[in-house]
Length: 314
Image (cartoon, rainbow, N blue to C red):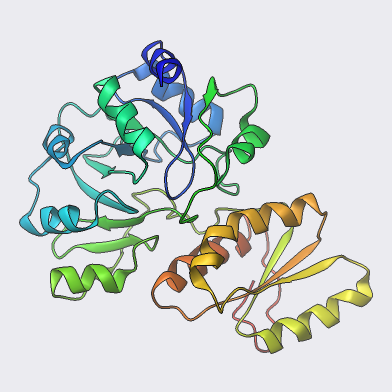
């Protein structure tokens, strides 16, 4: 704790643990440190960061015009994997928000990180602690593998429990919209609010909204079911390209918690093609499908792979 506080206080970057993924943290009010985040990640300057606070009382210091429904969801789900997009207060630098008048805020469900924010006396701005567009880190070793030499301190608190990023709910518009499915299912939020949440529309305005993201080096193909995955695996094997099927659909919490580790392990094992079986697109399955679809999407400017029978596309 003492070393983390000193590092952040001196404008350094600290890889912080959360229940979702490890974050690359800087003191929110330190413009130099915020700039370092974008440089280290190779992140576009207009791609906003998530602001992490320690308790709900701090919400009014970073956001304004907060609706009753936003407060209701926050009090029910925080600490936890939910991020709210709200109107930013004047205390939040536009460098953190990507030049926007909105700010993404959450309270992480990690005792060390919440205490670190409290002791620092400032919110911590933190995207995932990896290179931009690549697979998110769910262990301290993942951070070390990606950012060694470019991060001042890595706080190791073991593997992240949830393993996929937070759900992002936009309360800067009415009615609110889901910008990114994540660790809290949309259905749970709808139950709390008592009405259906709309899907996002318009341009990317929060983390994880780009079409291509969370990409390993290997090719990722998607299959609707195990039979389709097996068929595809058999067509690839004669080409002598190492392939692997990823299917944890019978245990969605395990699927989510190990997803990024599985993507990274495929690269470590020099797998050429990873064939992922998609779970049902409800609950936590929606977040898993979102990450897999983005991992499989071609980079901008590159052609996509042809679709095959029984597959929703690559």
